[in-house]
Amino acid sequence: MPPLTRWFIRTALLYLMLSLISGVLVAAGSVTRFPYPIASLSTLYFQILMVGWITQLIFGVAYWMFPTFSREHPRRSPMLGWVAYVSLNAGLLLQVVVELLGIVNANAAGWMGGVSILLQFAAALAFVINTWNRVKGR
Image 1 (spheres, rainbow, N blue to C red):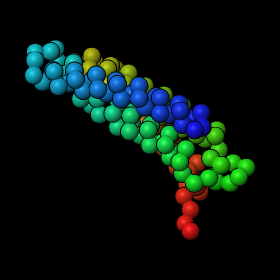
Image 2 (image 1 turned 120 degrees about the vertical axis):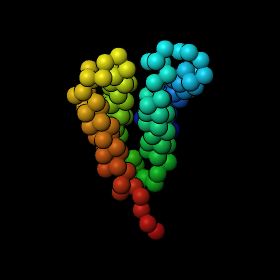
Image 3 (image 1 turned 90 degrees about the horizontal axis):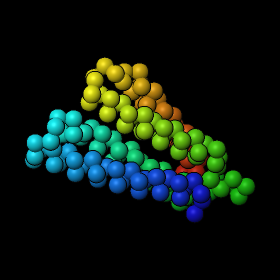
Image 4 (image 1 turned 30 degrees about the vertical axis):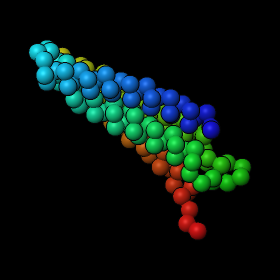
């Protein structure tokens, strides 16, 4: 298993735990009288679950299991893989900050949300560019 795949999968497992914790808080907030900010974490829960856990796991497994690009470069460009990893996680962590700031003050995190989305888009683009030619027909 390539080191990048291990990083993707281990990070995905951390995000799974964070999403489960935030999901429990959201569910508890709807049943109990938790303060408003805790009950409004549902957007953050879905972001961590879908991008942090599922997307990260898919990227890691696909990087490992898709057909090789060539004998010299089996996974095409490790550098693009690392760009995808760093961009995805930086964008997601910035999105967490944006969501938490948005709970406190809706206007506090304006430009950071845009940067977060651009980082996540850059991660997806780097992953697609790195993986596209590995999907071959017979």
